[in-house]
Amino acid sequence: MRNIKKIIKNVMVIILVFAVNTAVFANEGNLSKTIDGSLLTNENCSEISLRADVKGNILNQGTAKVTDNGNGSVNVYGAVLGSVVCDKMILKLTLQRYSNGSWYNIRTFSDTAYNTALLTKSYNVQVTRGYYYRVKAACVAQDGSVTESKTPITNGILVE
Image (tube, rainbow, N blue to C red; front, side, top):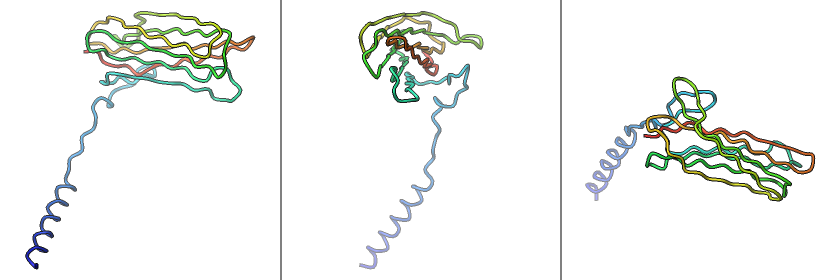
C-alpha cells in the first residue's frame, strides 16, 4: 500500500512538471500591423457588424465580410438589417486591395431593395494572389424622410 501511494505521488509530480512547463505560442495571424483602420491578418475570413447606437432607429445593423475561397477568389458579403420595414435599403460593397501602403478599389457592387427590413448580397470575385483584401460596405436605410447609415470595414485578409 505504501508503494502504491509513493508511485501515485511520483506520477502526480511528473504531471505537474509537464503542465507547468507547457509552451504557449502566439497566433501569428493576429500579430500584424493596422493600415487605415484595418488590421492585416493571415486569417481566411474577416467580418464586422456595426449596430445602431440608439433605440427608435430604422437601421439596426450593417455587416461586411470578406472570405478567401482558397481558389484565387474571395467572397464579398454585406447586409443591411432594419429595425422596421423600410421604404428603401441600399447596400454598396467595395472590394479593396492593399498595395504600396494604400488601399485601392478593385470592384464595387451596388444593390437597392424596397419595402423590406433586410438586404443581403454575396459575390465571388477573382483576385490576384499575394495581396491583402478587405471589404468596405455602405449600409443605408431610408424610411419616409429619415435616412440612417453605417460603414463597416473588415480587416485585411491575405490571399495566397
